[in-house]
Image 1: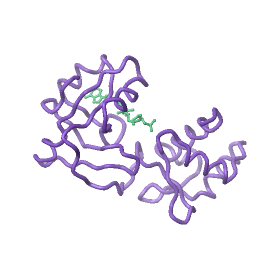
Image 2 (image 1 turned 120 degrees about the vertical axis):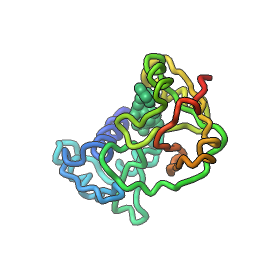
Image 3 (image 1 turned 120 degrees about the horizontal axis):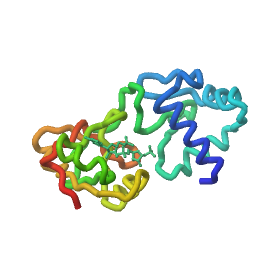
Length: 180
Ligand code: HQG
C-alpha cells in the first residue's frame, strides 16, 4: 500500500469500526455503510477519493480489513469494532493452538485475569506465532502466547473466524495460556 492508501485505510478503520457518526455515516446492524456515503464523507472532509481508489484500498489492504458487499454498494470492516455490530463471523472449531501477540508490560495482568477484549468486542487470536509476533510488535518487543484453543472449545468456549483468518474469542482464561 502507498502512504496515501495507508492514510485512507486508517480513516476508514476509524469510521467503520469506531466513530461512524464523525463522518455522518450510518452503519447497519452488520456494520455495513453505503459506499456512496463513504465517498461523500471523504469529499466533505476535503479529500476527493474515487471508487477505483477505494476498491484498491479494499483489495490491497495488508490485513484485508475491509470488505465490499456482493453488489459493491456497501463496505464494512471485517473485525475490530468498538461500535456494536452483529457480527456474521462463523462460529468454528479452532485448531488445537492459536496465538496472541502482546508485550511484556501487560503480561502480569494477562497472567492474573487471562486475555480480555479490552476496547474491542473480542480477544483477537492469530493462526500462527509469526502473525502473533507482528501483532505484538505494534506495541514494543513482542511476547507471543500460545492459547490452548482446542481444549477451550471442547469445554464450551465459543470461537469465531473472520473472513481474513483472524480468530475471535470472548475471553481466554489464564490456565489456557502458555508463554512461548
Ligand atoms: C492486551 C490489529 C491487560 C492485549 C492487530 C493487547 C490485530 C490485556 C491489548 C488486532 C489483557 C489490546 C487486534 C489483560 C489483553 N490486561 N492487557 N487482561 N488482555 N490485553 O489492539 O490483539 O490493524 O485491542 O494483549 O494486528 O493487540 O486493527 O488487540 O496488547 O489483528 O486491523 O490488550 O488489531 O489489527 O489491544 O490486536 P488490541 P490486539 P488492525
